[in-house]
Each structure stands twice: as C-alpha cells, then as structure tokens.
Amino acid sequence: MAENVPGKTGSDKTGSGGPTSGEAGRNKVRKGTIGQGNWRQRLRLVSGLILFVFCLSHFSNHALGVISFEAMDRASIWHYAIWRSLPGEVILIAAALTHAGLALWRTGRRRTLRMSRWEFGQLALGLYIPWLLIPHVTATMGLAKEFGFSPTYEQMLTILWPNLGVNQSVLLLVVWIHAMIGLHFWLRLYPLYHRLKTAAAAFALAVPVLALWGWIEAARRVALTRGITVRITPEQMLWSGDVVLQARAVVFGLIAVTLLAILIRYLLGLRARSLTITYPGGLAVKAQPGPTLLEISRMNEVPVASVCGGRARCSTCRVKVLEDGGSLAAPGAAEAAVLARIGAGNDVRLACQLRPEHSLTVQPLVPVKASSAAGEHLKDAYYWGVEQDVVVMFVDLRNFTGITESQLAYDVVHLLNSYLDQASNAIRAEGGYVDKFIGDGIMAIFGMDSNVTTGARQALAACRRIEAVMKALDAEKGPQFKDPIRLGIGLHLGPAILGRIGAAGTEGGRGGLTALGDVVNTASRLETENKSHDSFLVVSSDVVDAAQAVIDDAKAAEIKVRGKARPLRILAVNSLDGLVLPAASNAAGSAASLTP
Image 1 (cartoon, rainbow, N blue to C red):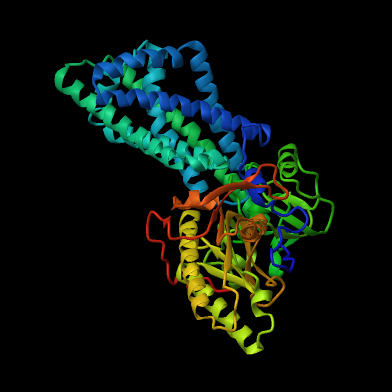
Image 2 (tube, one colour):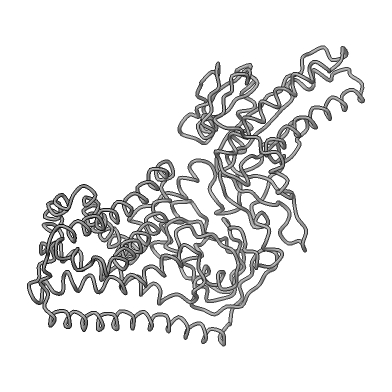
C-alpha cells in the first residue's frame, strides 16, 4: 500500500516503483503500441489486425446490399482483387493460421482457466468461430481451388438463403464481437481512444447491423427476382462435407489437447505446491513453480488488476516484491520495456510475466475490487487501493489568522465549526466524500463511486453550495469579526490512488480512506491560486470540460505547475451565479455508500 506523507497536500509517493501519478503517469499506464510485448504477442496482434481489415472490408461489402444487389456485386470486384490475389491469399491464410496457432499456444500455457469475463468471452467466441467458419471457407475457397467453383455473390447468397441464414448471421456476429473485444482491450491503452469511445461504440454497432441488413436484403432480392442455379454438383457437396468434418476434427482435436494440457498441469500442480505467495494482510497461498504470479492470484481469487489481459502492455498488474525466498529470474525484454517506461524500481515486477520459483511476499500496486466470494479482508476494494480518475477539492478559510486575532476562543471555535459543518454538509449533499479536515481547510473527493463526468458536475455544484455557505457565514458572523468571511476553493481532475491508509497488517481494522497522487497536490496548488487572482474558485479546465459546464465571467489563465512540462489551463471564478451545468448533479446520499 502506498504510504501517506502527512501534510495538507498529501503525497504522490507510492513506495519504490509504485504507480506513477499525474498526467505523465496516466499516459505511461495507458500508452500502448504494437511494438510492445514479446514477439509472439506482437505477431498475434499484427495477424489479428490483418484479419480485422479483411472482415471490415467483407462486411462493408455486405452492407452495400442495403442499396442494391448490383452495388454489392460491383464492390466485390475490388474486394476479391485484393484478397483473392496470390499475395492477398497468402497474407490472409498466413494471418489466420498464425493468429489461431498463437492463440492455442497461449491458451495451452495457462495454468488455470480462471480469468476475467472479457478474456473468457473472447476465448469462448474464438473457439466457436472455427465451427461456423470452416464450412464457409470450404464452400468459398476449397471448392474454388479443387473444382473451379466461382463463389460470386449470386451463388453464395443462393446457397445461404434461407436455410443457412441463421448460421451465417451468427458467424458474422461472433467474428465481429471477438474482434471488438480484442480491439477494445488493446486500444483502451491509448488516451485518444478514451476521447473517441462514443464514435468507436457507434462504429462497432453500425458495421454488423448494416452488414446483416445488407446481405439478407440482397439474398431476398436475388431469391425473388432471379432464378439462380447453384453450380455445385452433389459429388462436390459430398467432398465439401468430408473436408468440413476432417477440418473440424483436426481443429477441435487441437483445442481438446490444449484444454487437456491445462487440466493435466493443474492436477499435477495440486501435488507439487512447494512455494508460498504472501499478500498484504497476511494472506498466504500455496503454489507450484510454473504459473505466472497473475495466474496464481487468480487461482486463489486474489484480486490483481490486468487491463491488457496479461500481455505485458499496460503495467497495471505490477507488484512490489517485498521478500524473495530466492533469486528471481531477470525480466524478459517485454517486461523490462514496460518497467522502464513507468520508471519502476528493481523490486517491481509484472505479475503477468513473473513466474515464481521460490516463496515471495508481494504488494499489488494497482489492485482491483475483490469479488463477493473473496475473504472478508479482500472484499473492501480500498483496503487494497484503487487507481481511478477523481475530482479533488480543497477548501480554505481566507485570512483565518487575521479574522480570529484578538477574538475569544469560544467565538473562534464557534465560527470554525460552523464553517466546517456547513461546508462539509454542502459537499456531502452533492455526493462528495470529505477526506479530511486540515486546520481551517477541507479536502474532498468526487467521482469515487461514479465517473469523472458525474464527479466534475457534483464538485461544481458543491462549489455553488459552498458559496452560499460563505455568504451566510459573512452575514451572521457578528460585529466582533470585522473582516469579511471569504473562502477559496481549488478543483482538479486526474488519476489518484484511493486507499485505506493504516489498514495493512491489521486484523479487520480499517484506516482512513484518502487519495494520493499528483491530482491532490495540484488541487491544493489551485486553491492557493485564489490569492493571486483574488477569486473564490480556481478550477482546472479539465474539470469544466469533463462536466460540460459553462461558467460566465470566468477568467482563463495558464499556470506553471512544478514537475509538469506543459502549463495547466485554469479558470478563476469570483461568483458561481453564472454556472450552467447540463443536468442536475445533486446526488444526495451517494457518499453514504463509502464507509471509511
């Protein structure tokens, strides 16, 4: 667990090699390229992209059937010119065999079938594709090579419609969903993809809908208006049926052998558990040499993050090795590249690549929420720490020393408690979580149990409530306080480590929930910027953009933040009367589910 350094601004320290904070850290975690991973992973990705380009071309051709059969047929000339040429066929067949072979190899190396839902879905669909695809490939490529059959759209639509219409539609959907899962969990490492997710989702939905609509509509038109004779003899059909049976036997025999290898290794491993992996809180599990640390964790239902599915791309499965019962093997090229990219220390490794040969004590650095089936000490996500984007708020009472100078202790405490109570109630009323009180200041977090858009809107709405609190306090402060009551607020959005500090090593005890990272330091810096701008609120443009809000009369500026190469764009606000939010953001009581 990251260590919390006491102080008003928190700390971005996470121990040696811990998660990198701030914008640079987020970019390092999410940044991904085809060049990452070992050569098998890169080859599998490249072959998958080739197959995706073919499918996109083929399905786009289908979609033209919505316009007319003639449009579909004319476009197929260009499609076949590329993919039925000798170079096109060689590339396509090589990509298909490479992708399938590497997928089986990777599956066969597993020591457990415990995996995330998206990995299981992609694997299950990938294993189902050959069952539906082999007959289609045999009819299009096999008969063409063996007997000179020309698989034109007229011929293929007549063969498929209507008896095989369901099979063909299911094949199209299975192939597309399998491809979309793979693309999503590769591209989500790129910040640009997160900005284009809506367009990407529309694309992912539109292509199969149009392709299904197109080919079915074209098939119906051909069946109704043309008397097409299928140019396949009964003998050729028998040949095709035999080839389909043989190909399915070979492919599914390989799949069965792969799954059997996993089962045999698992059963043998039950008798050879010779090492112990110890996790935070004293949790210790027995394991055998061979599986990766990620696989060992999954086999024992210990939550460890793995955004890329164990492909050494994202670094979210990184762990800190606290104790090593022997000498660990040096990181491979793919692991070393990722660790170097995030500036990790020598005691940090990727769980998806580390294969323990000796007992270890490890600390997951970017854990995930545990399942309900896990032990009591694993059910609380914040016990482990959660890395996510949140909005951090700092509120401070301006000139507190001057206001309270020469005042009675009773009046000072009464004013301070009144301000803290009302301001914290305003924060909670909008769904925020009050992290801590720091003298006359408040630190709060928004978006912990929602998303950054909701969190940003809640934070801005809370600022409006706090402004009303400030005005009410100033009107009620009494004549003994001569200076006006003024508050200053700083708001910033970014990745933070949310964790229960002081929880590790306790028996069921829970430390206070807090946020760590650069976003905390930056939000505190923005709060102090109110002095320079003589303003009530200084908010980063990231928060305003995420909330899709408009603040009239706000003064735009740029400030230099220590440790950042690029200046930070901010808005200095004197009054929130001009705040316009796109939707009601009141989330009263939503913070009640957060139990520090």
